[in-house]
Every structure is written in C-alpha cells, then in structure tokens.
Length: 76
Image (cartoon, rainbow, N blue to C red; front, top):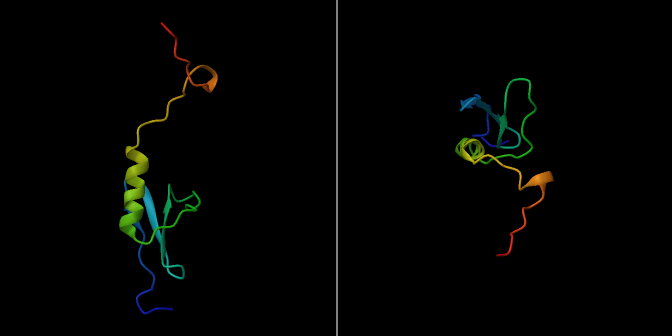
C-alpha cells in the first residue's frame, strides 16, 4: 500500500455522498446511506463532484413522440 493511500473521510456534495476506497485509490458516489455505491469510479473527489454536477444539471430526458417513436416530418 502506498503511504498516501490511507482512509479518507467521506464527503457530501449536492445531496450525494462521496466515498473513498483506499485499496482501489478511487472515489465512488452514493445517492444516500442505504443506496449501493456507484459502479463508476473516479480518480479524485473533484471528478466525482463534477459527475454529480453533470448528472443533476443535465436537461430532463423527454420522450421522442407517441409511443416513444420519433415524430415524422410532414411534407408540404
């Protein structure tokens, strides 16, 4: 184990918890205390915070059209 790879306290960002896995040298995201940690890992707490920001600031996904199909253009 590397000297700087000791345990680190978890952090909170915009309602999400950031956890450090010392043996993996990776940061993970948890939505709350009962939720499983994310499968995606991050090399830094900064990267994990940016991922949370991107996820929360992304525009909402809307269905493409009726029954989830893309709407057809009508010819003039």
